[in-house]
Every structure is written in structure tokens, then in C-alpha cells.
View 1 (cartoon, rainbow, N blue to C red):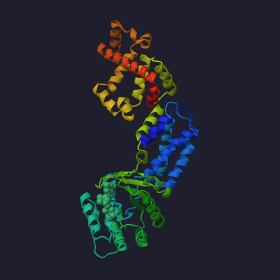
View 2: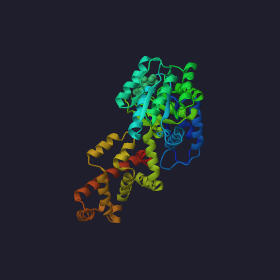
View 3: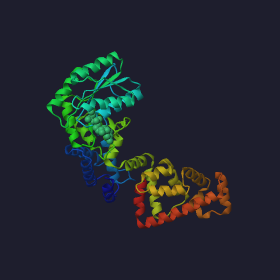
View 4: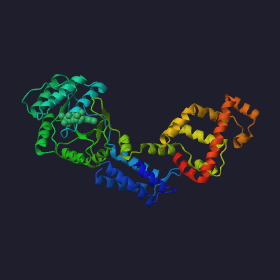
Length: 441
Ligand code: GDP
Ligand code: MG
């Protein structure tokens, strides 16, 4: 998306309020990106309509392009849609033993996620957890959970051949009460597709277990299908939360957005691998960034809005274009850089600046140096700042001493200033300065 939007941004260099056309052009690309990320068509359409309403006529921060502004609005709206109420990582597991029911299609990751969740509850919350497999369809499924239990040091309900899922659920409940467990997790069987049998079985288990949480495990790579599954399970069984697995894969998280928009159920956790510790609390920001594929630009826009005096930046830009760049201007730039997280902060956020940032580092241009340079400039008189060409040996000595530094350091600063002034002049002539600054500010 960032590449495609890059093209749109280039066309959207006008400043001022966002016109309907600006918004339309940018959002056409966003809509395609959403569909590519497997967001369902009605959800994408509805989402775009909401963003259009918010974005049209929104004042553009003068120093960023309308395109960037649109992306920011899209990003914020994505987060608002993805985020459920409350803390996704906190499960309702008071009143021990609290039953948690895991449901979902076969292969979605229920058994693995059961173990991941048990490990998390044990290690992070010090809970005593019992796991029970209700998967009577596949002979190996119960063994699989038992093996995982041994690995993570969590008890599993002993396997009794020939029992049906409801009987196992009852036994798990008794065992959990008698054994003094805080939580017991019921790992159910899945099918490749939802059918009446599967739903009937899950409903029967639900009725005996009366779960505090019914967590639907969904393969995050399946996109649109996942949403149908979620709707069906929620209608028939009642779901309290969703866990998206395989978010370590190439899927772009579109399922998460559709799921939230259509079912309204909170996403609680995401699975990020096959290992038992690869479970993380769902973070709307991360998934939004993933869907747009451009979290960095959004971060840059946000920082720019927070820290920059826009008017001042514009005035500075006009001066630069005329080839005026004195020590005051340089100090303004250095101050701004420090506010935006230092050299690494600024460079790291700008696309394609990674290499330059390494070069700057190699040249010893780091945050310490930024501070030394500001100290040197502070040590100059007003006249010297405005006209650095005045600086002769005696003045240099005085300035360096005032900053507690060597003259050599001051010479480095002067050299850098000359290089930057030259660069500003050339860029100003070519008209690329404005674009570069739009990125910076
Ligand atoms: P179940 O049929 O729903 O119980 O699914 P399983 O828990 O047996 O998982 C099916 C396969 O998906 C296994 O090979 C798991 O290791 C794998 N798996 C589960 N969760 C994740 C995940 O978050 N990321 C990745 N890469 N693989 C996962
Ligand atoms: Mg299983």
C-alpha cells in the first residue's frame, strides 16, 4: 500500500483543507488495500464511507500532505474499529474453577492455543490450570494435548476411552473442583466446515460446562471465510471473544477487521507461531499498521503534529528556498531533530533513509553530537549566528570555550552548516526542497 499511496501523495501536494477529490483519490487506493488484506467488501465499503465523512473538509496540518493526513485518519479509524471494549488480555476467570470453552474449525489452532493460554495463565497470573480434550473424533488429538501439557507443566484430564464430549466436560468440572484448580479449559473437536452436528455438540458441552469465556479460535489467514465461521458460532453457541491464529504468516490481518465490524466480538489474543509461548494480547495499533503496511509514516505524521511549530517551519522553508540558511536556522533544525527522537528517530521514520542514517552514524553524527552542536550555536552572538562567515580564529576560540568544547568541533559544525546551506540552495532551485520538507515536517 505504501508504494501505491506514494503515487497518490505525489499528486496530492496542495496544502489547505482536504477537498473531496483529494480524499476520493487517496481512499480509492485504501479501499483496494483493504480488499487485498482480505477485508470483506461490505466492511470495506462501510469503512471507507465513515472515513470519507471524517476526512472531507478536515483541516490539513499545514506541513503534511493531504495524502498523509488521509492515511492518518484511515489509521485512526482502523484502530477504533479493531479495538473492543476493555482489556483484551483479561479473561473472566474469577470464582474458581472457571471454565473456558475453546471452539472453532478443525486445524484452526484450538489445541495449540489451549496450551498457549494455559501457559500464559499459569506463568503470568499464577493460576492453577487444568486442560481437557473433548476431541473424540481424532484419536491423536487427546494425546496431542497431553504432550503439550507435559511440555508446559500444566495438568491434563486423564484420558478415558469411549467417553463422549459431554461426559468429559462433566468429569473435567468435577476434577477441577476437587483438585482446587482456578481455571479449566475445554478443548473441543472441530470439523473442516461448520455442520449441524458440530454445532449441536458444542452447544451440549456449553450447556453442561456453563463457560465463563467461550473463545473462538480462527485461522487469521482464512480471511473472509473466518467471518462466516465467527457469525455462525456466535449465533449458535455464543462467543465472548476471538483468538486469531497464524498472524505470523503472510496474511494481512483483514480478517480481524471484518470480524470486529461484523460480529462486534472483541479480539483477545493473536497466535504468532507454533510454539507454546507464541501468544500475544491483541493490539489494535499493530494490526492496523499491518493492514495499511505503513505504520511508520503514520508515526511520523503524529510526531510532526505533536512537536512542530508549523508556522515557524514554513517561514524557515521560505528562507531556505531563497538560499538563506544561517546558524539560527541550523539550530532550529537541530532542536526539531532532538524533539523528534534524535537522528535515529527522524531518519528511521523516513522511507529510504535507513542507509543515510547508517552513514550519519558512521560519521559520528549521533545525539551527543546534536547536543554539542546546539551548545556551540548557543555560545555565538546574535550577529555571529546570522552571519557565520564572520567567524575568525579569535571568535572561534571564544565560542568553543563558551561551550566547553574544542575549536575542531566548531570547525566541524561550520563545515556541516556550509554543506547544508549549499544543499538547501540547490534543492530550493530544483523545487525539491518543498517536497523534502513536507516529509520532514
Ligand atoms: P485444532 O485442530 O484447532 O486443534 O488445531 P491445532 O492446535 O492442532 O493446530 C493445527 C496446526 O496449526 C498445528 O500444526 C499448529 O502448530 C499450527 N498452529 C496453531 N497456531 C498457530 C500459529 O499461531 N501460528 C502458526 N504458524 N501455526 C499455528
Ligand atoms: Mg485440536
